[in-house]
Length: 88
Image (cartoon, rainbow, N blue to C red; front, top):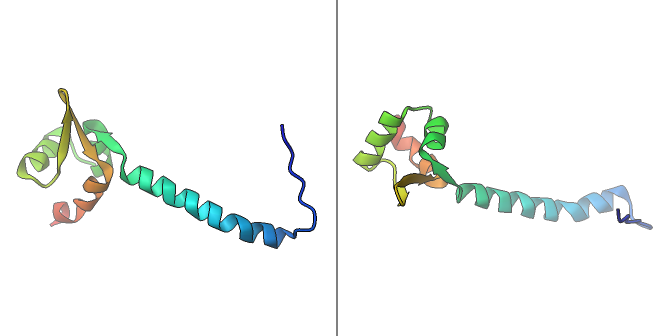
């Protein structure tokens, strides 16, 4: 295992140097999560609904689905955006 020795730097300086790197990583994880593709089961679990309700929301246009072959998927960011209309 490689070791890194830091000479002449305080703990505070190290923390300040790491903050932008940690923020960039958090931003990348958020982007990846927003672009995450969910199955019907995962979408039902996220919304706490059953598959019949999911089907109704999809057919009514409240949720947008994507088909790949005979499978149906939902984009997490679009599902989360649709929560407001589902509650009204």
